[in-house]
Image 1 (cartoon, helix red, strand yellow):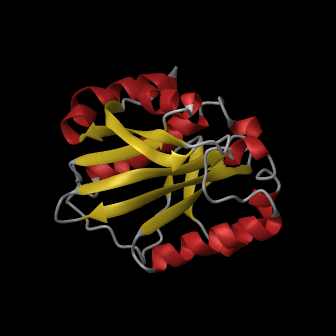
Image 2 (image 1 turned 90 degrees about the horizontal axis):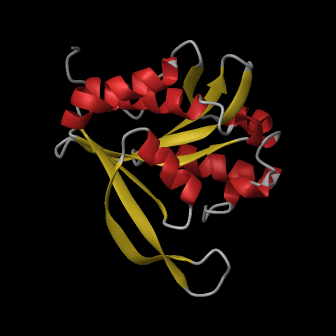
Length: 203
């Protein structure tokens, strides 16, 4: 097991296996991501939108700015099997003193959803955070109505922690809706999640 490494937001971390490659997000990724980000289904449960080139440019520039501020670390996802950029994901709210981090802001183009790519990406991120950064917990969250996202989080080993009531504006514009909170703990990663997720991505 490698020595603990403090998360350095200025370092360009690249995480990869035979199927996926996670590269620090930059403005050069605007054009390739614009080819897949026009799908309105991607943005249904996001407060920020990137469904036009102008919105996507602003979305990516904000993510890069937040990385420079040390609050988020955005990655672009590259599908090595299809040799295409597939989407984005982020690590955020990192605390070295508490040994905690969150993972989210994840979306993929339509052709990559349900392909297994997400599980490969999550494995790379979980391996990095638990085994390199030595965090104790990784937090996840979603609109409670986002059934697909909640199922995807549970499928990689996340456990439900609770509900934040009236956290978000409702998707239909009428009233408010809840957020669901989930997490994976370090002990869960090493005792069961890692092996189960390995079996799933190798199936």
